[in-house]
Image (cartoon, rainbow, N blue to C red; front, side):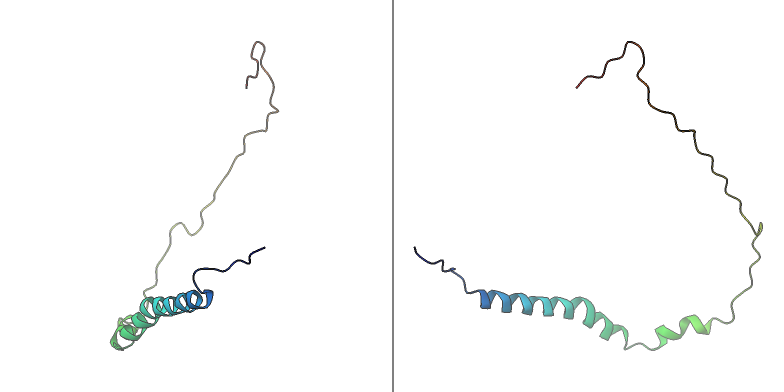
Length: 84
């Protein structure tokens, strides 16, 4: 019985997949993080605006009332026949 021999070497495909994964992570995760870290003023904008303002919420409490419909057992009506 002849043995199976793949046409493409699996090692080369695995190495190409690992390289493409590293390139993808580098482009979409590492590169944007590097470009964003060059601007330190962007991280301090929120603290430069001052102290937070107190807000009064009126009404301070919200009541949610839920009513369930009573469960009704299914019943077959007269004259109706289940069809498939």
